[in-house]
Image (tube, rainbow, N blue to C red; front, side):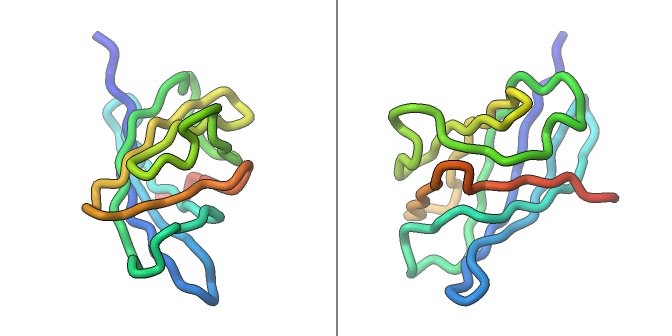
Amino acid sequence: MQTENKIRAVVSYDLAAGTWGTGILTYKGKDYPFSISGFLVDDFGITSAELSGEVLNLKNLEDFSGNYSGLGAGAGAMDGTTLKNQNGVIINVMATTQGLKFELGVDSMKIELRNK
């Protein structure tokens, strides 16, 4: 039985500082903290939001960190998007905060694993 890899994150938007957040990657049944930076929020009434997603093609933990960009049509969709990094890791991410609209620019979402 293959363990499901997933993420959950909280992101915040500050007009001066931009968008940033923290999250947890669940990989092979263990939790790993990460940071997020660089994407655009398309609803300025939102100052923070929760995201969740499924992680695919993650063969090594080290491959998770990187610069993610949207894949094809649907990137920047109002209810979620699919992202891929330079290591081939794919994240299907959805906003779980009702009413959130977010837009991701090309190569604009950076994820970095952090020390526990």
